[in-house]
Length: 89
Image (cartoon, rainbow, N blue to C red; front, top):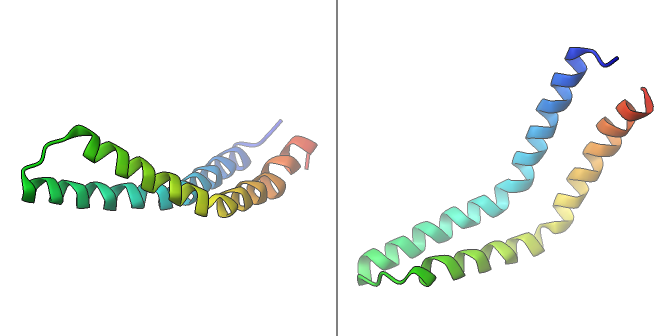
């Protein structure tokens, strides 16, 4: 039976890994959203696709660039934390 301390520590570490992995994409989405919103406010262009398409495109580019970092972070978390718990260590 897993002790509560180990469970909560594993959950805390898992949430931190999730924050680290999602931070680059969320940061780019925030910057793109602010930039596009500023552009729309300055030009009075209120096109819905203008907000959606560039933001998704920027997020896809950042996802593609940071995919190796995300994979390494997840693999490190699983090999150092999850697999030993499953194996009974």
